Image (cartoon, rainbow, N blue to C red; front, side, top):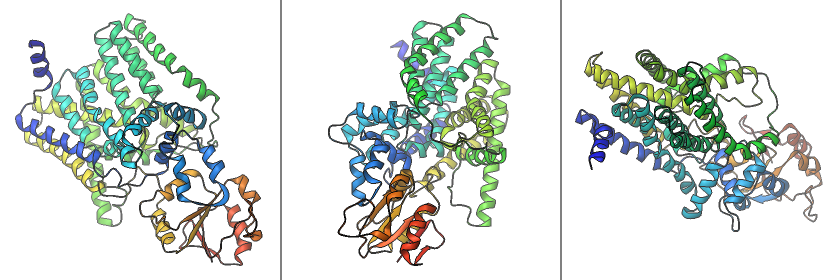
Amino acid sequence: MKTMNTFLNNHCQIHPNWLKFIIISVLAIGIFFRFANLEQKIYWGDEAYTSLWISGHTSTELTSSLFTGEIIQVEDFQKYQGIVPGNNVIDTVNALAKDTPLMPPLYFALVRCWVGVFGDSIAAIRAFSAVISLFLFPAIYWLCWELFNSSLVGWIAIALTAVCPYQVLYAQEARPYSLWAVTILLSSAALLRAIRINKPLNWGLYAIALTASLYTHLFSVFVAVGHGIYLLVIQRFRLSKILMAYLIASFGGVLAFSPWILLIVKFQEYYPEQPGASIFVIAKRLIGILPRIIIDFGPGYSDSVLKISVMLILNSLVLAIICYASWVTIRKNPLRISAFLVIFTWFILLVTVFRDLTTTSGVLLTNKRYLFPVVMGIEISIADFLSYQLSQKKIPQRLCHILLLGLISSGILSGAISLPSKTWWNKEVGNDYTEIVEQINQYQNPVVISDTKLWGIWNLIYYHNLDKSNLKLQLFTPKTLQMFNPEKADPNISDASTVDYGNSDLLLFYPSPGLIAKFEAYSDGNLASVNNLRLWSLK
């Protein structure tokens, strides 16, 4: 009983009482934001891949079956989405191994078990991420306790995390990012505990957490390397017992991950080699995403000069708070804390920026969804800054209270604005999709013809207001497109190169030049872009 009372006194006491009330209220609001309207936002291409792998199928199997040039229905995709009778979690892991080992299997295996119990609806699949995101709260508290030995820092960090617009959005997405965030926090807290209490049990816990993190996201490699750099710094580059224990534990984690590493080595990355991105492009991305840790009024606020001006002021203010809080936290804390915060927050960003400046391979790694360590590191720095100001009274208390309430209120307001929205900036769907869908819905009997990638087709058919009742699809791969000739269409011939369109309205969606050329001769000059969209109409 005495031990329990000591634990409660150390971890559950928050002073003053008004702060306790605010934190509990904010936590409840953050939980509400994570579970409200789970089916509201579009189920975009990346999430559709989650449903594909849950089914135990691969994109190769789907495209070979449906991208044949034959007329199909939207319902034909259903057998490649969600639960498929006879397939289980092993089929999910095998599908990932064949399709893209760059996505480790832990999240997808867990969500496959989840849908086996709760069903494979969009809400059910996303609910798994929402539930996992709740573990962020104890995980970030544990990390703050190991760093600062302060319950106040942990509770403020929980409040900031609860209504963080960035974290709320990804908590509602059927992708592994919330689980990744939890494993990053757990492995980092376990490392600090193992350093503080140098026992095999604690290092074993670190090895398990690191293994889980590696099996969730490949960028955990950068986190693990950052842990090693941190230990080298605080051990002053000496091969101490703690450093040896870390090397053994991290080697154990990597060894446990080695079966999947072999699959990654064999995998041929399909992104074409391209020149590196400019520093301007990368800086623009980062300046655009960092304020969203605190305030996020969405992608559509820039439709007037007034709104642009207001958002520039707010974003500049938030960036100033982030920079100042991070600087004060680093300056005031000993090396053990400041070195960890710098490496934890910024190492992965420096690595990805360097990679993107030298080569992109078709994709930027400084992508907003890969910045979870940066986001959480900034939240922890702000929490420590606020806790320090509240306890030391270095600035007027009223100003500190206003700052804390302002940060929390910004997150709540951002969540309230994004909650009813159909899409948001984290859904990387083309800006013209809304108008394209509106145009398709105007036709009585549309046939959407396309040779774009599967990801683009999923973005279309899952779009929130697309009328699927009479919609038909004709999809091509480069190989099947070569065999297709619309001029030879004959309703009496059943062949992939011939199709009877009847009285259908033919619409080319994101067509390649080759697909356009196929239909130009067939259309007798009636093929034209619709409102300058990536949608072509053929009468």
